Length: 375
Ligand SMILES: Cc1ncc(COP(=O)(O)O)c(C=O)c1O
Image 1 (cartoon, rainbow, N blue to C red):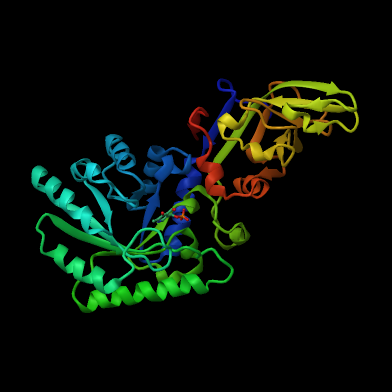
Image 2: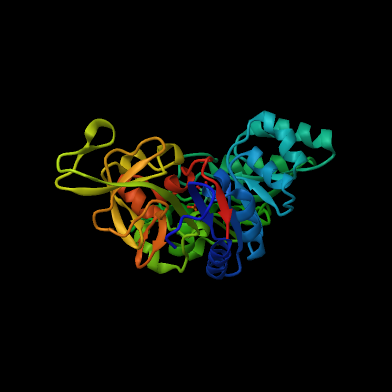
């Protein structure tokens, strides 16, 4: 494809068949465990509603989001599957969450009174998952004895239904899995203690994308797959270990092409100087689209199946590339920022490596103003 598809100058095409395929790959790896499709942050930038629907079609049974508003947006789109709010909610979110039949993560005594009040007001039960912190150091009970006593107290409340308990791995993508294994051991002890006390809830869950690959023993009743749905692995070195493929292709139109003389400088700050005569292209993509400014003079885009290095600083709406090696490039061509073209590819892992971040941040960072289309 050399012509940029008509309409928008910049475009993210999301392949829902790739999402479905990735879900099936993880379902297979999950064994008997259910799959929760994590679609927070607007489906890691892919669009939460279409991704959620595709994931459910492919056999995911739960959805995970970070905030109440994200869960409500799925409900407003008509999605009826169970949805867990993975993050913390403030007391002000309780009423909406219970009204929206959203499952909630709880790890603080202060979470309960607003939930009980909301449940009474609505004549419903608040569905909760108790979070334990086994080494992530973020949210959750560290003291399991205290957590179990608290859970016992929760059981007495008719307004509250304990549906699950979970933890989150900090480093299940590491080459050295010692930390993840220690988290697993602690969580497993928690689960065994709950079982012994007759407190084990129906949904015990721990594994994220990495742990599905690296710690199959941590699958329990459900796995929470985020980045894997979108075709990436947290550790890019593990890409061969599971057959997930990127679902998002990001392109922008080549707007302008011209020759510049040796010594000519390109873009703000004159941070690039042409070493000889160069053919420079201007692409309709900038940091306001989520193309990171850290790519200035780093990395490449793909034009007509060839690599075109980024030259000069990435601007707010435009970025220049060196097309000297792509003489056939013409204004109107489609430039691939993320995706494949000919035999070449450029992935969010590449952008992440070039800018010192992770694929998650590249994908979530694709700006709202970039239209998403679903193919
Ligand atoms: C609690 C929780 N579970 C699961 C996930 C999914 O993680 P991943 O995208 O690495 O699969 C996240 C995402 O950060 C999370 O916060």
